[in-house]
Structure formats: structure tokens, C-alpha cells
Length: 281
Image 1: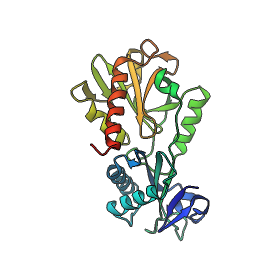
Image 2: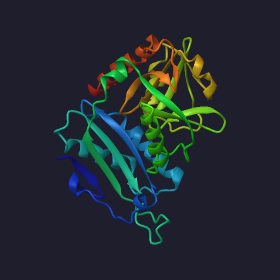
Image 3: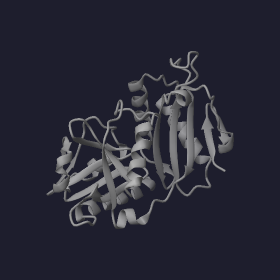
């Protein structure tokens, strides 16, 4: 059975509870972050916790733990789950109990949940997957909050169309990001991705560093009308890593197969994470 950290205690997963009056339950008010391990080493842990802190600041949630303290708790929780080959790590900071059921009172709870890393379908990576676009926008996109109504709804729409992800399109027809992913496409030798009104992806930041010297990077708005001219597309996320995309809505991408440039990015990321797990980077 997995061991979680809940508000100062390490407990078995079936003993992990918070108050039903917590604002995270009543109002969806809280923040979280998510990462995985490589060779049981949490990937970019400090950066994920920094993003958690940034998310909390953006929504007005007080954190009563330092970055160092949260990192230490995460590492200890991973050590207490030695039965995992690799782990998913979810860090949650709740809004806490509020006397009026609405106003935060600075008493949020820290939770760290470490679970076995899920294996995603091989065909996503060998054959490529489909995504869809949806005309919707996230509230405070720079914050990774526990209010995931938009994302849950958007993924339901994707699954109904046999797609693995939905990409948000705003009122200006800009393609922004997925429910849990960042979006990229190739134009000639240029790797293009948006940088405005999105959650700053940790995997995205690693990808953009790794491709330097291999591709030119262009950070700009992406108009939905560009879909027909995209020759290669991929998405990235902590749990998904790099997934080639071969169809957007009813439009095939390129020749309908993962492209050479995308495969190059996948290999660069795979090589890097292997070294990361070995403690060499």
C-alpha cells in the first residue's frame, strides 16, 4: 500500500483524509504540482515546488512551508514507497478550513501523494495520437490550481472524439495549451510554441533547452488557422513526456506519421532523462 504525507504525518493511502470543510473540497481552492521520478530521482523537484509557490501567489493562497521543507517532505515520501519502480508525485496545498466557507484563513494543508508511475500506451509514441481543439480559456492560466472543471470537461470532449488531449483556443483564435500539456509544431527547421497565457511547463523548459543547437526556436502566438500548414506536431507533459501528434480535429498532420524532427526531440529527452536518473545532469 502506498504511503502519503498528509499535514505532518505519513499515513497509508486509505488513511489519508482532510476536512470536508476544506476550501479545496468546497470551492476548488488550492494548488498542486505533479512530477515523476527517473531511477527514483524526482525530476526537477525544486522547479516544480517553485511553480507551486508561484501558483499559490497568483491565487492568493498562503503557503506555510518553505521550498526546502516541501522538497524534503517529497523526497522522504518517495523513500517510504520503495515498492515502486518509478513514481508519480502529486504535491497539493489546500485552501484550508474557512469559517465562512469562502475566505482563506492561511491554514491550508500540505499533501504529498506518491503512486506508481502509470505506463501509457506504446502506440502513442510509435504511431502518434490525435488531439482536438476547444474554444475555451483557463482562469488565471499561470496558476496550477485544483479547480480542474475546465480540464475535466475538455478531456471528456477529447475522448468522445477518440483523442488523447484538448488544446484550448482563446477568443483571439490563439492555440494556447492542453489540459495538462504544452503544444509545439515544426515549420521547416523552426520549433514553434506559444509563450503567452499558459502554465509554464517544467518539461517544456527542459525541451526548449535540449533543442538548442538542433533547431531554431520561435516563441509566438499560434493561430488556429495554421493547423493545415503544420508538418509536425507534438505535446509534452511530465507524465506523458513527448507525444507525437498525427491528427488535429479532422486534419492530418504532415504525412500522418511521427516526423523525423519530433523523433529527434523524443530521443534528446530520453537521453537526458536517463542521465538525470543516473545523477549525471
